[in-house]
Length: 166
Image (cartoon, rainbow, N blue to C red; front, side):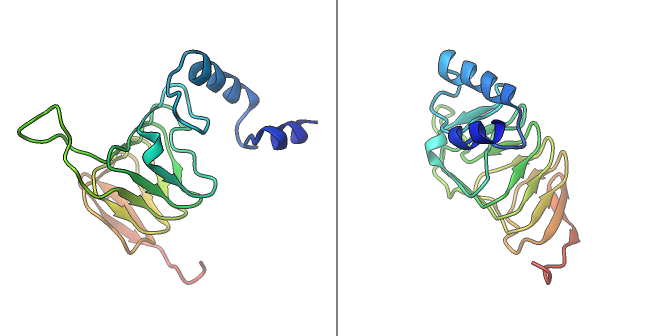
């Protein structure tokens, strides 16, 4: 019966029904993050969700405390996961006019990436497939080649991942 209900309503197996009940109350009744078309954690904030391109099994904001600002767009590849308190910031404020944002390229995150707890990814960053970003890192530049582990502030490659098996 549970499997049938999950299939009918498109519910993920890795989240309990209570997640969807809370999501319903906050998004539909309280109108918090109401324009987001996928279930997210009630403590997360998604700005401009219509500018987010999501791959298969990608739900930005499903972890607690995520802040996702997609003013310039965000593209996320299949099977990428975000830990708690992740910040994705696609647009900086204009230095001369704090009430406006600078136009820039979108953030691009590849397939099968893992973004750890408290990570911040800044505008125009591109991460290749199979990139792991360690907790508390600040990603200020692109790592398009992927298959690596990043850590630090600013983030740098601390380990390469063998891509011969993928």
